[in-house]
Length: 133
Image (cartoon, rainbow, N blue to C red; front, side, top):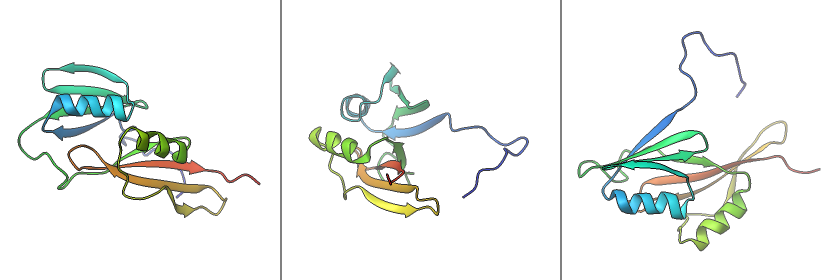
């Protein structure tokens, strides 16, 4: 994939991701205490976090929460193995181990590992690694 100049009138960077949850208090504790995302504020059944400059917006609902039809949230990390280890000690159950997804022609590697939130929705860690040598 090559980078190009933005198309005039194109949308900008992703600013917020919305996700439905059935229990806002459980979700706040998990995203804040387990994943370590800074909690910005909660207003009623709405909670907001800073996910590295992208706002994560959680809203409590009885309708439609759960893994069906959800998009995967990919969290970019510097060291996927260290983050995997740290989250495992906090109780995150990963579906696999960090693994190589793709190696670019210039040697840059794309690594990922997958897990789920308390309601079973897919999440992933992603990391770009430049091999030494």
